[in-house]
Structures are given as C-alpha cells and as structure tokens.
Image 1 (cartoon, helix red, strand yellow):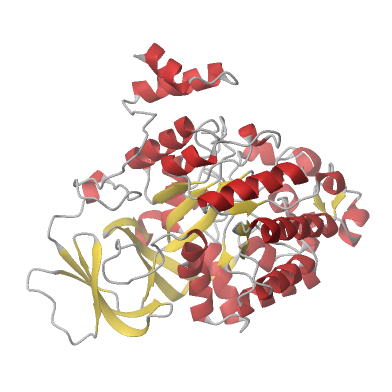
Image 2 (cartoon, helix red, strand yellow; image 1 turned 180 degrees about the vertical axis):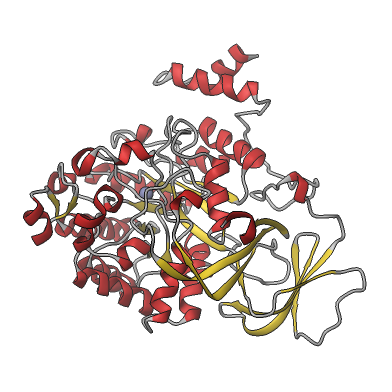
Length: 491
Ligand SMILES: [Zn+2]
C-alpha cells in the first residue's frame, strides 16, 4: 500500500520527503490524496465542502438547541444590540430579542455582560505542519487560534514539503479533520517549492481545496513569472496573496532600515523595498485583472498605494498585523529577536498610517502572520534568529487597544477580524447570519490580563508582548456550535 501511495504522489523533486510523508499518513490511517476532499462533521452531518471537526468529547448532540442568552451581539452590518443567539445542530438558527422564549428543550447559557461575536477569521497563519512539527502543529496552532477567538485560519504553504501540490493540500485537510480545533483553509504556493521559478498547478490546487495562492515568506521576484501567476489566478478567480519585499534591498537585514538599525549596527530592510514590490504587483493586477491581496502591509507608502489603487478600481485588498500597528522599530533593542519579523517593525509614521488605513477601510483585514518558532531558534541573536512572532492569542486584545485609544470603533475592529477577512477570500464565515455554521466568540471587554507566553496553547513563545497588561479577553469560542475553548481551562 505504501509503495502504491508513493507512486501516486509521483514527486521527482523530493521523493524521500514525500515518501516519508506518505508513510506517516498511512500509519495514522489517513488518506493523503483525494481528488475532491470532503470534510464532514464528527456527527456525520455536512458543514459544506470545507467544514470541520470537532473534539469528540464535546460533540454537539443532534437536534440540540443551544441559546446564548443576554449578551451584546455585534455582528458587523447586521446586529449591534442585546440579543439571544440560537444555535441548532451546530448552525446559527436565529438572533432574537431577549424576551423571546427559547424552546423548552434548549440548553441556555447566560452570557450577560459578554460580547457575542462571529468567530474571528485569520487570513495568514503558519501552522508548520507538515515538516516543522517542533515549532507548531495543526492541533496546537488551531488550539491557539481557538484561545484567541479565531474559528477560521488560512495556512500559508511554507511547510516542508511546500504546499505546492495536491498531495500536500489533501494531507493538510485530512490532518485538520483529525486534529484541528478550528476550520483550516490551505493556501497553495505560487511557484514550485516557493522557489520563484516554475508555477504550481493552480487548477488542481484549487480543486483540492486551496483558497488562495502565495509564496509568503518569500517574494516572487521575477516580474514575468508573477505576471503569468496573476493571469492564471485571474482565470481561476483565485486571489494572489503577495509577500512584497525586494530582496535585493532587504538582503541580510534583520530589522527596519533607519536610525535605530544604524545606532545598533544591525543591517536594515528599507521600507522602499516593500513599496517597490507593492507598486509592481498593483501594476500587474491592473494589467491582468487578478485579485491581489497584499500581505502584512507595513509602510505608509504601501497604505497610500493601496488606497489609490482601490480608488482606481484595481481588485486589491490588504491586511495588517497587530505587531505592526502596536510597535515600532524603537522596540527592537528591547525585545531583540522576539521583535524580529518580516516585514520588520517600521517607524512611528508608518504605524500611524497603518492605523489610519484600517480605520478608513483602505486596509481590509487584521491578520496575525502567526509564525511560531522554537525557543532556542530565537536565541540565536538578531542576525541569525528566524523571522516571525506568534500572534493568535494576543491579536484581539492588541486590536482592542486601538479601540480604547479612540483610533478605531469597536464595530470597525470586529469587522476587520470577521466579515472583512472572510470577504477577501469569499468564505462564508465571519457572520452570525441564520443558516451559517455557528462559529461564535464570546469576549469580556472589561477583563484585564497579562501576557504569559508559557500559558499559550501555541508551541511558540516568541512574542514581544511578554508581561504586557492587556484588556479584553476571549472567554469562550465555539466552532460549529461546539465549545473548543473556555477561558478557565487555559489561563
Ligand atoms: Zn507569513
């Protein structure tokens, strides 16, 4: 069976790795390759083509009705009022005024004083599996997602092997089905091995379940291959998520190029390099009609270009990460490698521009770029430590800071975590509309807490926010009507 499996995978580039992957898959009794993968709910009901899960002990009972009573329901564009949420068979049944009597058999949960939100959607996470399980797995990464209020995450393809092939996509989907606490949507690679030379087969990746294309972690440097990628992606209506970085400019840099990097004697990564590639990708999106999504926007110049492109009618969206709107490069000497990520923390001017872009809708979504690494890797010092910080378990409270500071309305903040990211990829998520899968996040806006990385559900501890006192805490997270996180269990 295993030999047949290897033959099916037919990979001449990394046969050893792929074979190993296949063996693991067979040992776990999971089929790696399916033409039209289907993921069903644990009780056998369909959640649609990309449903999930869930924790078998918490399995939702058939025909059960759960009522979340007395909370403040904030469903962007639909509801911002005190209401009860009825969940039937894992699906949103109704959002009703609190005086409506629930069915006699309903299980009622008093959520008075809590914010009742659609589960958060993260367009940009690194779950590290397959290949880097010592950093994170689909199980631990989605547990971290649930603890952070995220019920849907999109995983970047820079695993080992890279998700440039349906065998890897299928494996991720099966692994998700077996181990995840949140919905996982894979993102396929633009180029084989994300090496920037040869396009992956977008059509089969889409058929296998990839919802977008990206070589995230690396830019696609060649103009011509990016043009061909956007042409093919446009034909398939697949968004292209661009990691915009001119590696000729960023070179061996480890932080933003500016007064701080010069004072510290560390090589800088200029914001101009990011801007140049954003400009190129906007030009290519305009020429090809592709849907371009700019990942982890970090510069004032980038915000301005996205704003202009939107007003010109280019099909463009953008995301920003909480670390970029919270910190500047001034924080790097203090936090060291735990403040090293790509793109790097920029200047105060950039940070303010990002917040303004979020507030006025230029930037569509907040995404974490959750990038866990082992503790020893981050101890290699600024030059050698890998790029990236974890983000799933601090994202909401950092976003809430902007609300407290009066820079963002609460509704806009929630929109950027729910319906807006869902819209970027056309996912039926981020809403409490009756009929959708009941992914719900309950928040206590008043609760204060301190960031203790050793309590993270992620394997990654690499955050600059150690010891920060934050306000706004995830109390409970439900995926398809099933509780996948409850605060007292974790913090
Ligand atoms: Zn990333």
